Length: 399
Image (cartoon, rainbow, N blue to C red; front, side):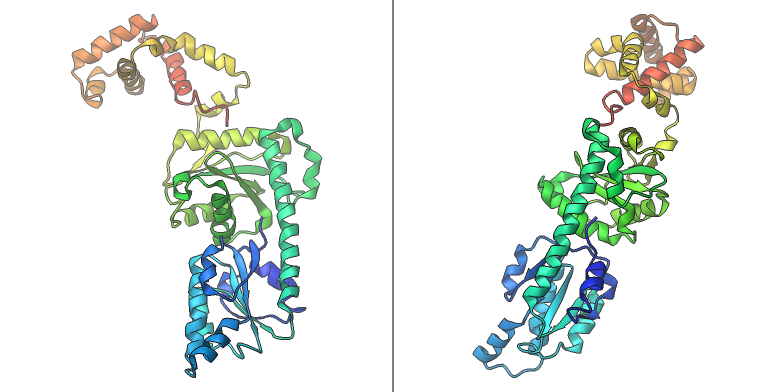
């Protein structure tokens, strides 16, 4: 829930006499910090989301040292800064004009508009240190509030013994009518397994691309997933999340799921479990995976006593787990096709790329191993449920 550049500008524009010159389309970007520089070579050290500020001291030095009189030099000087800021995902640039840089060229304003890079001017009589202190205080306060909200929802899911539901009144979710949880998986190798790098990218690069009010969601990283807590109707958020992810260099192969919704803040753990199951069961990157589409899996997930499920599976299919892995998988595949086709041996043989006699042997052997009659309807139902359980045996605890 980082501050947007637009929010910051709304507060500082008048007292600091800022003028928005270009890049208005980029004002929805979020701001991680305020960054002062007079040396373009140091820009590579920023981590993304910074609002930069410069006086243009080096421009004046270059002019004096190299005896430069070419008016186009200012454009070249500023574009080098701007290109590097864009490359390293800075949120915008404030130029303190009046001493070293008298006027920002129209060509630079046009360039920033073309790149959707926010560019601001601030008159020389305004001290940069005052602006930096004001913005820094705003960001620090917002970071504290965001961490409080994240911790609140993290505890609601994973640390229920520390969770205090009444504290929702201190968050932007105080007026939420319903809650839901969206999960987006990602491959941490793209970020060199750097959790802080992942978090910064999500907060200060990825999220700001979504045209969504930041007060309607919060997010945190948990076990190679971005977890979004949503308030009220999630339709617009899901559409934006899916669309942006498919064009993002890091998240285009991600799988996205969404839980059902609840009016009870104390059911966040269950909502997370539902979103996790939808993520794991469907595992389809080409669409949003809805918990509501899980059918019979919803019944399984809803069983509170997991020992009941484990015992049911053990009593029904457990004997197959004692077999060597290749043989076990052959039997499971044959059984799955048997139940799917209603026991059509020829169809099973075709789908399994096996001779009908091989299929018949496996069916007879299954009946012997499991001590069942596969022609019995109740037996088939029990085995189908057991196969569902096998699919999610390591997933339905919602971690």
